[in-house]
Amino acid sequence: MARKMHETPMLDELESGPWPSFVTGLKRLAREKDYVNDVLGTLETSYRTKKGYWKGGTVGVFGYGGGVIPRFTELKDENDKPVFPDAAEFHTLRVQPPPGMHYNSDVLRKMCDIWERHGSGLIAFHGQSGDIMFQGAKSDKVQDAFDELNELGFDLGGAGPAVRTSMSCVGAARCEQSCYDEARAHRTVINTFTDDIHRPALPYKFKFKFSGCPNDCMNSIQRADMAVIGTWRDNIRTDEEMARKWFAKHGMNELVNDVVTRCPTKAIMLKEVKDVRTGPKISSVRVNETHALEIDNGDCVRCMHCINVMTGALAHGTDTGATILVGGKRTLKIGDLMGTVVVPFLPLKNDEDYEALVDLGQRVIDFFAENALEHERTGEMIERIGLVNFLEGVGVEIDAHMVSTPRTNPYVRTDGWDEEVARINAKKAA
Ligand code: HEM
Ligand code: SF4
Ligand code: SF4
Image (cartoon, rainbow, N blue to C red; front, side, top):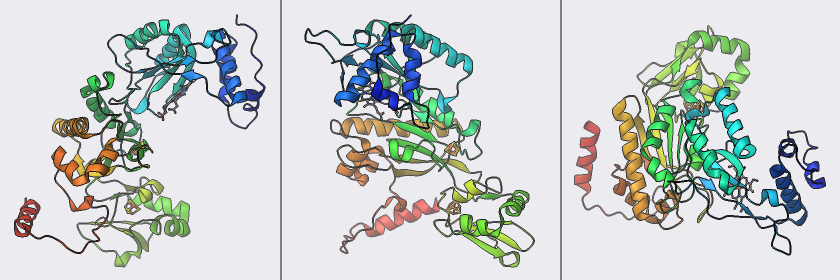
């Protein structure tokens, strides 16, 4: 039985809002565990004094250079004794989730049991890092907890200047928008770079994220050094029965105002059936006897909006793969950056395709390891050295689609012009 609960008048207020409160959860654990009771005591003190009382340190498990985030209390009395002794150490284990974050309840129960035995009982599914955060273990329990989690089939995630834990969307398992096997890509890539996850040896962190379609549920474009986002090369598919059904339910106002006018590139038109064009890049579907949608796929930028609104009636094409972007990150040396397209389309169907993905990842990481400055993300490195140099370094052909801003200087050098034209024409003809 735990000691008497600490008074927490400030934290109590956080329980009063409309949402479930982490304070309520912590109190529930604290009834059984002095460990969590003392964490509440520490937190209440922080709220009162507006100071944080945790410092880092070095704690790890055998054979790993990262994955455990050490936290020691700095809240000490005049004799240098912790004010809340049970919570003097509150380390976190970062554990990699399965691709698509699929668990069964048996595994979740076992995880909870392990963490109640060796840690605080507090688990966060999942942190922004992508990991399951097993929060709160004392130094002498970290190895035991890890061993049992490892036995269950799980591994520590990344921390520090290393390849980090990856994330993939639920994708192919449950989502009709999926354009490739995200789980396979995730596993294949992460298994290749396991060493780089556990032994931090890069200039800074490096993250992969996998989204099955341009909806990018993993926010990979904003967060990943290498974002793998599903897409397609052929035309949007249509289904007349479902389109008619959709139209019967939603009507003309919604079709016009929520689908046609919201296409960012005006690739969709609503037409009388008799005026609908045909052609290799045209998709069309009737919504009733008189009207049809006409999509010019040459203008479609795969934003997903129309497909999201009319899922089933419209669907992505069948020539699927992924777009690879490099350099997304949050604010650091320079402000937030979104990933830049380095491979507009990489087919992801067979073994060789997945090997090509791993190979590209390897080249990008190697180049990053060699060329980035200390504490510099890929996006910042590319800004500093220039995209052209990066592409050359990783052996990717430059493509007109990669120009983010047209030049403003009208003077051009034309030496080598004819050879370059011949080379591009030969490439186009290939
Ligand atoms: C020296 C003190 C601490 C520092 C410097 C620190 C720093 C960090 C950093 C850098 C992250 C990663 C955020 C991200 O991935 O975007 C993080 C995540 C997290 N930390 Fe701490 N932390 C400290 C103490 C604690 C303590 C004591 C707790 C819990 C009692 C805690 C709970 C968490 C949680 C739940 C996350 C995951 C949040 C998320 O990724 O969504 N941290 N922390
Ligand atoms: S990113 Fe696309 S495929 Fe993945 S879950 Fe989201 S909508 Fe589905
Ligand atoms: S997916 Fe293509 S056609 Fe549909 S709204 Fe987006 S850009 Fe337009």
